[in-house]
Length: 151
Image (cartoon, rainbow, N blue to C red):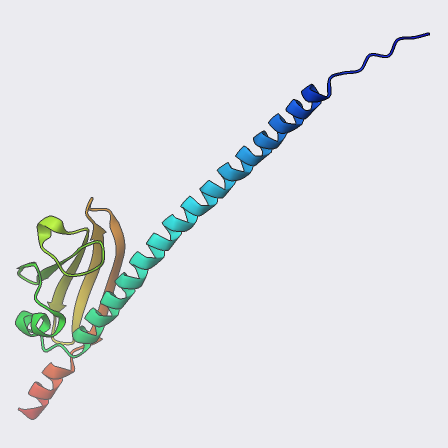
C-alpha cells in the first residue's frame, strides 16, 4: 500500500495570508496615489478659482477706469507695490492680501492707455516665480471720446 503524504495545513494558510497582504498592499498604494492626485487637482482648481475672481474684478475695474493709476488703485485696492503703470498685489496661501515678504501668490497688472483703448496685462505667479496664469484684456476708451466730442 502506498503511503500518502499530507502537507501541513499551516503552510498553505501562511501562503494564502502572504498573498492577501500583497494584494492589500498593492491596493493601498493605488488608493494613496489616487488621493494624492485628487489633492493636487483640488489645490490647482482652488488657485484657478481665486485667479478667475481677481481677473474678473480687475477687468470690471478696467472697463470703467478713467486712465489714472490712482483711480484704479482706489477702486481695486491699494497695491503692495507699484512702478509706473505696473501694479503688484501680494496674497497669502488663503488669498488674503499680505506683504511682499509673506506672499505665496503675486498678481501683476500692467495698465496702458491710448487714445482709443485701455489695456491691462494681468499675470499671476507663485512664490517661486512660476507663472500660473496670464491674460491681456482691452476695452474701448469711451471717456476720451466724450471729452473730444464736447469740444
